[in-house]
Length: 528
Image 1: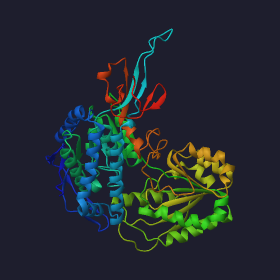
Image 2: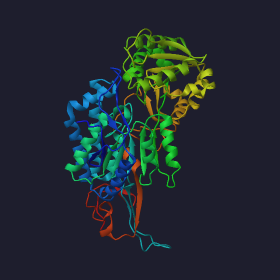
Image 3: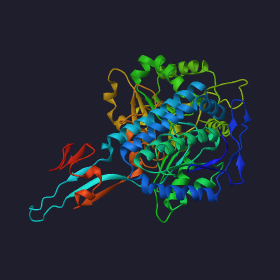
Image 4: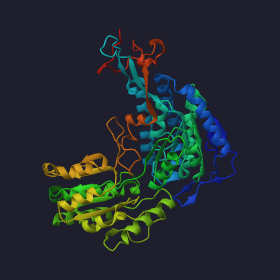
């Protein structure tokens, strides 16, 4: 049941005087529930609980954390249709999308549950002592990853489940042993409260300390700013706009004790059409990319916003077929009137440039908050001269950059900012002739795709969902997959420590039976 209150640990609270409602973009009306923005007292209480919970939670075994994470998934399943209906009413997204995203959220929780149950993720490393080594004896030195403390997670507008309350940031932080305070996204606060109730129920059922999780409502920036500035908070997870992520990064950097902000802030996800791929397969790629550009009203951080090619008759055919395929796809509802307005504003800022040609834009009457599919074109020379045209337009929009030759194409790629993804479309091994171009693209992205689409982010060990700034604030980490847990930990080294006082992961007998590096070799063996 949605109450509109905040979760301060396992306590529901609504002492604040500021209230707000969510919005149904499909019906173009406000939803009925009134939500209470967290007061300063409530925020302080949540932080205090998280700080105290960390003392116990950081020592919780991998098995117990695993049980907790599995139970969160079970509790989310129990929310059933109420969660799906609330998701749809607050996002304008379809029931099918809601169900698919719920499944992804469950899978992420279950993945981290399995990871911490195994325990090898802590990267235990042991270099045994060599007291007889000359000229200097070698000490016994052991290392592992350890949680850093309470984490603040900001819910994402475009993924009310998978990147929000119990999404990848929260799941990975809890798996690491860090309490989490979620600043719920104001566009889907009801969805957030339901999921928060599942996490709290799971925490109570599995004996986790009160304060291991809190969920705070907010319609503005004040709650988030307070959290990031607080000395007890040790890191931040954020998915959203460049302006929002950069603001949080700046706040965290100015603290007396700076903390990391792991922000994913947007991307245009460049796609490069190689000549043979265009000539031999332009119909296939045009149809494929018409779906990728318009899927979910283009509201994906991996939406292909820029497509590059070398001018040719085949490239013109690709553009024409792409337009015809996009025409067949009906516009869909965007997440919120504010996102719809931002899409139109950013799109029009691009289209008003004299060098940009509108190849296609939906005409006629379209329902409120439905984004008009738009395809634009520009020549490479003009694109290079105007960095403003390199920026993300969040929505069903893509621009094709027609370059005069390979040299101009390489310059275009070299002048892009950091991106989440970069895609190569090639045929007949022609990529072998463009190694320099591919290397240039690699320097700009976190994920290189060959003959595919960037939309769709697989949750697996090998996934990198990150990239050079401004795609993310730290390209060394991923926000998706098992390795995203490394954002919430630091390395601790034990030197000449008594075996009985070492963490179980580093003890001679290896009681957890985890994979460790012992004197440079991977092993599960005990140390005699």
